[in-house]
Amino acid sequence: MQKLKLEYTINSSPSVLFKQLSTPSGLSEWFADDVNVKANIFTFIWEGVEEQAEMVSSKENKYIRFRWLNGEQEDSFFEFKINQHELTGDVALEITDFANEEDVEDSKELWDSQVAKLKHVMGL
Image (tube, rainbow, N blue to C red; front, side):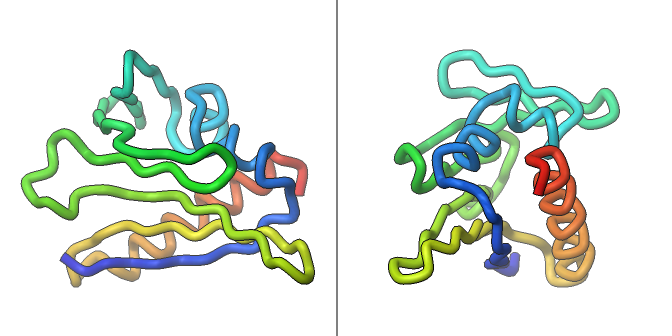
């Protein structure tokens, strides 16, 4: 598995962006077709296929980390981190994910398209 770290500039306040990253309603607008949550278990639905992830840690307006429940490996997680530049106030979304070496480019393209959708639903 190869670790991916991707960064995107998002012209939004950290609190508005965090809602899109951490709530079922926010995530279902750009990340998955539908999202349900019970306790800390998020069920993501894509084209009728369900994948479950546990929200293992978060800090409001800073980051949220999910661990895939079907993952065989320890590093089977993805994380959204919100970075705000101290001087300019620019907000960046940093995504950490993992992919098999042969899937790295596909994963990057998928994240690019998902983040483009996120910006669109946020009106950016």
